[in-house]
Image (cartoon, rainbow, N blue to C red; front, top):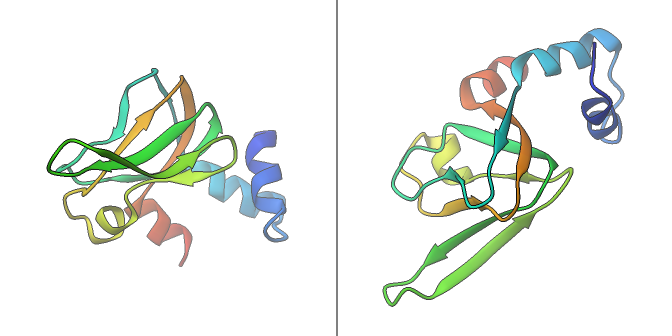
Length: 117
């Protein structure tokens, strides 16, 4: 069964059959994150891209003096990750932190590649 959140998200972008939507659902993992939990941490490989179903997260970096620079906020129906680290499978240059509890659909690089074939 295709969850309504996924159905609405993807059918706004393109027309998909029920079997195509099910294929999309099959490659995602649903994860729950706590407030202040990191989805991506500086220096670690960013294994997933995150589609936020509920909650709020931010992507940010710190300069040498500890000043925070927010790059992105992600709320319901938004995607977030360190995309350079995710696609290159290299260490992350930013943090992605939950500002409130988050429910996210996670997509690994391997699963994205398989889905796009």
